[in-house]
Length: 227
Image 1: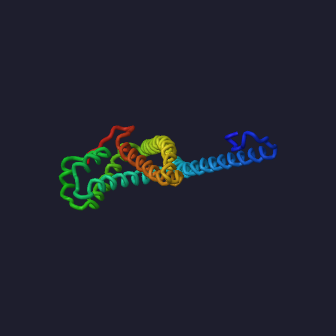
Image 2: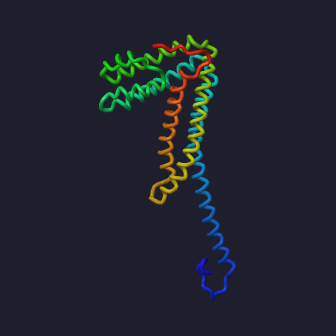
Image 3: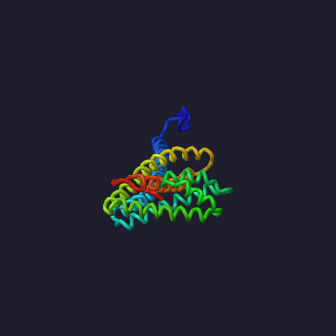
């Protein structure tokens, strides 16, 4: 009786009980509708991410060698720009820049000395981008075109697949985390969209970094890099 807020010493009329049941049912159905709506909106965020990733994956599968080359060089350019920017915020930290660049392609001591004479980050970035194209030309000569196309496609697809799986896990963790935001008066769905966008940007950054650090290491023929 306490649940329905009815006095214990009065008989329960059928119409009163029916009205209470209908109100309770309507409330439950409303809560379930809101829950389904939120689930759909959460899923919509992931669906948009999936569309972008699958679109890029399909593009890699169907593109020709030149398209793959352009995509990989773009990834390399983005990674080089990121490395130089991070380590040039106040002073140019050449040792840190060189250490990171060497995870992409080797640098000779003479080339390091030459680069240290440059005082502008933009020019350093440009030099690295020119160098990476020189290394790519060497790789094109070392591998035949057919082999290099297989290598590039394999690297791109594997990198996308690896980071996409990781992204799905991160988004699932995020969903659990933002639900706690409701207790702080914030809309969990809005937080999910904002943080989800940041995580998606990190996903692309991870893909670019992985491709950049693999392209000159994976080979079918014996590499002959000497610049």
